[in-house]
Amino acid sequence: LENSVRNSIHQTLGEKKMRPVARTVTALAVASVAAAGVLNATRPGVQEKSVKLTAGPLAQAGSVGSMRSIADQADLKFGTAVNMDVLASNEKYATITSKEFNSVTPENVMKWESVEPSRGNYDWSKADALVEFAKKNNQFVRGHTLVWHSQMPDWLKNGIKDGEFSPPEVRKIMKDHIVTVAKHFKGKIKQWDVANEAFNESGSERYTLWREYLGKNYLADAFRSAHAVDPKAKLFYNDFNIEGMNPKSDAVYALVKKLKTDGVPIDGVGIQSHLATQLPFPPGYAENLKRFAELGLEISLTEVDVRIELPVTSAKIANQKSQYQELFAGCLAVKECDYITLWGFDDGNSWIRDWFGGEGSATPFYANYKPKPVWSVIKNSMMGSGR
Ligand code: XIL
Image (cartoon, rainbow, N blue to C red):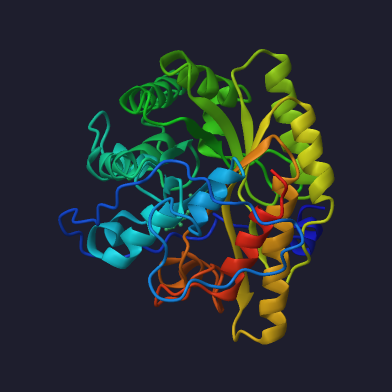
């Protein structure tokens, strides 16, 4: 079953070997574009068919016509994953990040290997720089991620594998990390992807080092630990290939339902939404969102992109537009779905090229930072949502 399901739905993510990106970090010299507050742009009617792409420079932060002003109007948190090295060195990237989005997620710099590279020694520099950028630009920060089997530092991964730590010690290491990180960002991060990718495509539990050493309850423990230090932060379980109805989303549904029943502090589900034009749009998407909402959970689309098998053709672009449209419209149709984050907004910095051989063009901006027509598709689905 495992293999047939795996082959019939999306390609498994996150199991490939990470390819380190060698980019020089310069001093944080990001553009400081002050954010204006919520604006009163007139909401065009649902009838409106298309929006012209902004000619020349994009609109000012929060100004009429910018995507973030439209997101504000739709009561939507609209974010992008941010590569801190690029943010620090590329003014165009920084300007679009601040002008077009009201939220940011660290693409890598809050992951375990980044913040706790050796045991008990925390390096907050890049994560703090993002929080600072967001503050300056009046943006939300989505925390990502506290417990995951991937991008763990060597001391931890090898230490657990080699039996250097006893199970109670592994438990303490996990708790110390969560508590320290959640405390450091307390009040600055409104939502956390606490636990990431704990299931296989078949719906079975992914047998990670955490699961192996800590047993079934480690997820509940992770949520409790985060909540204890930052009770106001909203806590999410996050995974991929759970957009539609399938064995994996069934398993996530059962997990979060059980956590709620057991009184574990969980507020929502993060649906990563890494889609692909060679695959059908996830069947049962609306039904799936509905069942999570009915549990009293919030829903966030946390890592949206729609990759294309290269070369790009007009048919593939049409397919991509329709998948972006369905994804956004479906979320916006559900009150509880109020947070959508792109996993990078531009092709030049998207993770797809490095992780999916022969695929690319997954984001709404070309590598030259010009918006593609699909950017208007996203804009139209926000304006036509009736929110
Ligand atoms: C990816 C980043 O985009 C890459 O730069 C990094 O090399 C690997 O991780 N699911 C997640 C994200 O939850 O954290 C992953 O991000 C993409 C898949």
